[in-house]
Image (cartoon, rainbow, N blue to C red; front, side, top):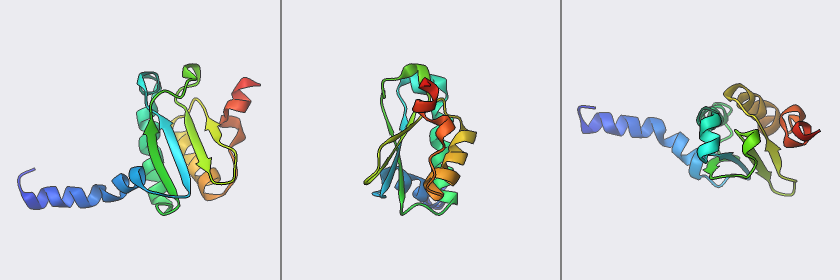
Length: 123
């Protein structure tokens, strides 16, 4: 970075991603980012959700945030999805690829991806 204009350009590029993490959408995607989650690969999962939600044009509808320990370390990376009027959905052992699929099928299409949920992992 060599100038204030260059810094302003970077700020503009990142604006959508910051809004996703702070937004007030009707759907909240929460990625567990405690030490266990980060060690298991939660950072690429968080980044994938932010990017794919933005690419899908869901910025107004979906908020992507992070939290500390969710409490099921053996299933990290863990992602919880909260929607008004619906039960929370907990996705486990997530990857960036699975996150992209969850955005497409669940957040965009309204269908829970059952094979990635904690219920499936426990059965």
